[in-house]
Image 1 (cartoon, rainbow, N blue to C red):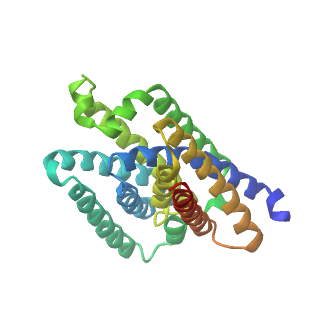
Image 2 (cartoon, rainbow, N blue to C red; image 1 turned 90 degrees about the horizontal axis):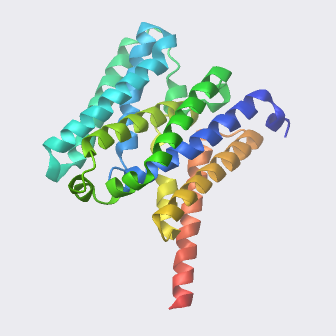
Length: 271
């Protein structure tokens, strides 16, 4: 239990709890917009940027990852407009490009010391005070935007055409959502890793949709589940020396299965 009182664990817990708010919130909006795979897509683009950053200088890794995530997010919006009847094609195209570029750049960097695993599987225990400041700033930005634009986000999530007809500048909101998603994914990669970041976006949303009765209640539920999974996951991983990112994701899956079982049981009892 000594690990719980250590400074690096407390930094990890603080960073995890912050991302446990923003990632599920953004994930809920993305899932409602039928863009649940955007997490995987942008994470692969981010990893490609990280690889390029390592080739330039290790200190540029996360910054280049953010640049690539932003470019990929904007490219997805462009492709969604080009293939309106096949919007999911945009995700497949950008994901393929991200994977291809990442593999090439990692191959080019074989002669360098590249900490690839930390970006693939997360390195939450290595969070620094500077990392916490960045995560905190992103959290404030995301919560400020979502809090002030909740009604508009609700309309965008459920019916973008109706939002456009009502006079909402949908293009601006789409770009804004893309930028916010890119920011969240970039900082989440340090916590759960590029291969697992999509789970932190989508599984709390799946849990919420299984039990929530309204959009407002679903917002509360995703945050509660995200915070619970991060806190318990880090505690379990720290005590039993497990991979933090993987532990958080498996705990999220366990919560989802439990909620689905409870819903099914309650449905049988009430029928």
